[in-house]
Amino acid sequence: MSGATVTFTSGGTSPNRFFVVAWSNALIVGTDQRVTFEAVLFENGRIVFVYSGIGRSATNYVERGAGATVGLENKAGTAAVQRSFNQPYLNDGFAIEFVPVASK
Image 1: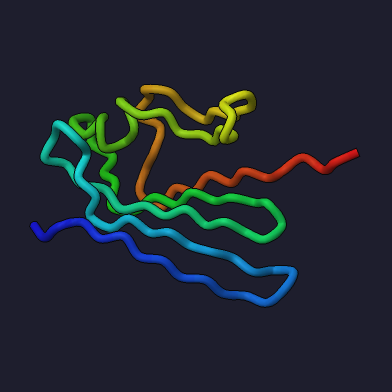
Image 2: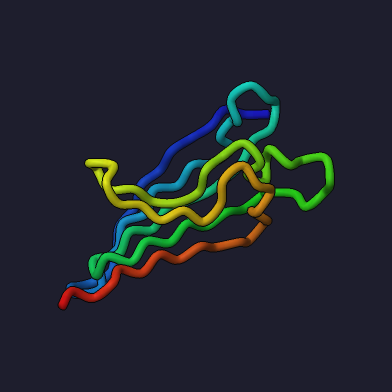
């Protein structure tokens, strides 16, 4: 199996620009399993995580997130949102969207 790659791309026009970071064939530390996923950052603050190549079998719990935390946290570590923690929650083609709360 080939090594992992990280690629970047951007697109759109203001106010709908986006930036994508894609990890392909990334090795899960301590295993021989690999995953592909991307983070899409939108100009309006939306963030979408997209997962692919993740199997649904009962034997790939780590690949599906059993040893991971999925969520977002601010730089200071004072605010966060968590979608899953050490749970086999992820599947092939799965996406998680985080939408910012409007300011008052």
